[in-house]
Structures are given as structure tokens and as C-alpha cells.
Amino acid sequence: FTVWVQNHLETTVHSRDEVILEAGAEDTCMYLVSRGHVTQGTEAPTVLGPGSIFGERRLLGLLETVDDSVVATETTVLFVLHRSVFRQGLRLFHSDSLHVDDIFLQWLNAKDACDLSQALLFRGCSQHLVQALRSKCQTRVVHPGEAILEEATSGDMLCFLRAGTATQNTESGSRTLTHWESPNAQEVLGLQRFSGTVDAGTVCAVLEVETTVFLGILQRFPREVAPMLETMSGL
Image 1 (cartoon, rainbow, N blue to C red):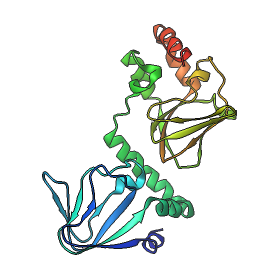
Image 2 (image 1 turned 30 degrees about the vertical axis):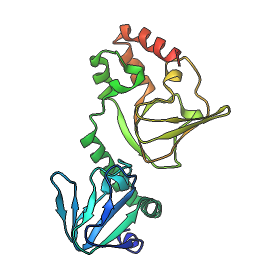
Image 3 (image 1 turned 90 degrees about the vertical axis):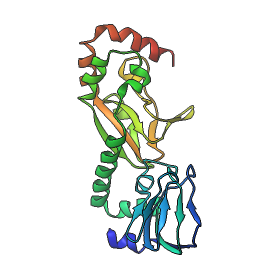
């Protein structure tokens, strides 16, 4: 896998004081400094020299925009790995894909407290319920184009989109799902049958809990049921 990646790097050359990346710009690449130096950030810039890497989180799909500007301090040569090329390599080397998924989740857990109370279903609910549920949840990584949820198994797991964007496709059309939306909460609560499929548009982190486990926990918090039903019935 590493050799394959090395053979698919793009080489770019930048002159002194050239702005390589501007803060806020969209970017999905990882960069390796081959020769020369760059500074990252403006207020307290970090100097990066040969062997330094930046942009890893954008490559993995955790970020879509540049946090800090990057400027060449001298003539600088960079090796650039594009996300599309990286994803192609992971499709060819599945075992390495699993390792990269683990890294993605580690970085996600470091920056995201996984606050389930952000989900519409749990807004205003007891934190004791949220904490009890969180302890039973697991997060899995789903890659672009892969199915997150299918009609045949939509009642097995209650799922939430923790990171990334996805598309729910039905006979009547499609809609985009974003942070902390649940495509099947209404079905799990017995309000409305799920139809269609949900496919990952970007790299997604999907938080899941078995439906039977969720309903079992909910039985311990009967006062929370009516507000949940009211919230989800209004959608």
C-alpha cells in the first residue's frame, strides 16, 4: 500500500512567500515537505521542514477546509496525496483500509465528545438516559458510496450520523443527512416505516445501538417517551 501511494503522489514546487493554502479554503489533500520549509498559521506560525506532514485530517475526511494558512519560506518541493487517489488505494488494499478506519475513529474521538444530546431525538431528555444509551453505542466508518442503512434491516439498529454527510434515497426523492441526524428513529419508535436506502456521500462515522437495547433502556425512563414521540411525530 505504501509503495502504491508513493507512486501516485503529485509533486509541486513553490517559490518563496508563496501562499500554498489559505485558511478557510476547501482542500482534501495531505502534504509532505520534500525540500525547503513552510510556515503554518499566522499568529504563532509553526515551521515545517523536510519530512513534515500536514493535512492528514482533511485527507481522511474529518475536515473539508484549511484551518491555518501555509506559506513557503523558500523554494519548497511538496509531495501531494489527493483524497480521491488515497481512497482508490484503500479499495485495492482492504486490510490497510481497516487500519485507516481505526485512525479516523481515534482522531474523531479526540475532537468530538460524542454528545448524543445534540441529536433531535434526545433534545431536552435526561442526561442519565443519554449516558446510559451512549455506553451501549458503537461507531463504525462507512466510505463514500457504501450503504449506511437499507430497508430490509432498517429496524435492527438505531443509527445516527456522527460525522460526514449521507443521502437518503426514496421513491419520492432524496434528502441530505448531516451531523447527528437519524434516518430511522421514527421507525424504531413505531411511528413510520423506513423506506429506501441511506448511502454515504463522504467518509461517515455512524453511531449505532441495537433497537432492542435502545427500547430496553427507554423502559427505565418512561417520562422521556412522550416528548420523544411528540418531537419525531412533527417531522
